[in-house]
Image (cartoon, rainbow, N blue to C red):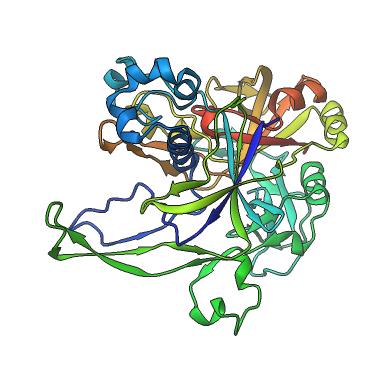
Amino acid sequence: MSDSWLKLVPNDVLFFRGTEPFNAGETGYVRSQFPPSPTVIQGAIRTGLLEANGVSIKDYVSQYAQLQAEHPRLLELVGSPGHVFPASRKHALAGYKPATLDLVGPFVAVGDEVLIPAPSDLARPKGTQSAGVVYLVPSDDTILSDLGRIRLIRPVTQGKGQAVETVKDAWLRLNERTLQAYLTGKALETGDLVELTVSYNRRTLEGRIDENARRRVHMEAKVGLALQEKSRTAVEGMLYYISPLRFGDDVSLLVGIRNDLGELKLPDFLALGGEGRFVSVQEAQAVRLSPPKEVEGMIDQTHRFKLTLLQPAIFAPESADAQESPDAWLPGGFSKVSHGSYDCWEGDLGGIHCRLIGASISRYQEIGGWDIALKRASGTYRAVPAGSVYFFETDASGEDVLQALHNQKIGRFSQLGFGHCIIGGW
C-alpha cells in the first residue's frame, strides 16, 4: 500500500522527550520515550524532504508563499510552517495548510524482524514470565461500575483460582505466523514475546555478559548544563539529567510513506529527536500486515471483531477543555446505549456500524510537539497508547470490516500515523 518505506538507522544516541515539565525548580530528570511518537517522525520527515529538495528550513519559514510556485508538490506534502497540532485555533485558521504526507509508523525492527508493543489483550498467569500467554475478552457476565452495567475483560481460559496480569514491557514479533495466531486467537509461544529496552550496562554493550546486547535498546545516563544563549557559557546551578537511548547494531525504525513522491528526492540523513542527532535513511521492505482468511470467517460467524492499535490514537475533540475529558479513550461519534442486560457504546467506525462492548487500554499517553514557525510548544493531546485493544460487535460482513479497518488509521491526525490498526476476531 505504501509507495516508500524507510529504514532509520541511528548513528548516535537518540532522545525522544515527552511532555513532562523540564523547568528549573520543577524537575531535573527526563527519560526518553520509546518508541518515538508519530509527531516526532513527521517533523523529521518533513524537514528531511525540504532539505533534500533544496529548501532550507530558514527559507521555508520566512518565504513559504514565494516557494509555493517553485516547489508546489513538495510544499503540498509538507504543508505550511508550523506543527500539526496548532498552538491555537487562530493559528489554525490563519491560512494554515496541513501536511498531506500520509505516514505509517514508526515500527521497531531488529534485523529483518518487525516488533510491535505487546497487545493489551494478552496476559500471563500472575507472578511468572515463562508460562504461556492467554487472551482477554469481554465476559458474558456484567458488573455495575461508574461506566454503568458493563462486561469486564476476562481470560478466555483460566485455571481455578489462578490470577493473570497483562503482558507488560514486552514486544510481539510481527511475522506471518504470529500475526495469524494473534488475529485468530490461537496459542502464542513464549518466544513470540521479547524484551527490547533494558537498562544501560557497559559490560553488556561490550559483549562480556549478554551476547544479544546488539539486538536491544539501552538507556544511558547523561548529565548536562544550561548555556547562556549569546556567550554559550555555563549557567550556574542549571544542571539537568536525561536518559537518551543507545540502539543496538541490529535495531532500527521503519516508516512508510503512502504518497506518490514523483521526482522528489528522499533524504540520506535525518535529524531525529530532542538533541538533533542523526539517523541514516535506507530503503526498506514494506511491513506486511495482510490478514489471514480465517478472520473474515470468524467475523461472519460471531459478528465480533477486535481492533488493535499499532500506533497511539487521538480521539479527543478539538476543544482544549475536552482533551481532559474522561471519554478521550472513546472513538469519536460513539454514544452510550443499553443493549439487553448491559451498557455499551454505539457508533460508526470507518463506515462500519458497530457496538463497542469493551476495551483493554493502558494509561493514556500525552502527545505534543514543537512549532518551528511560532518557536514554542504546540498543543498537547491525550492519546490512547499503542497496543490497546477494542472489542466490537457488528452486523457488517467480515469482508466489509477488514476492507474498512484492517491496516487503516482511525481518529484524529491519522495521516501522520496515529490510529494505525489491525483487525482480528474474538
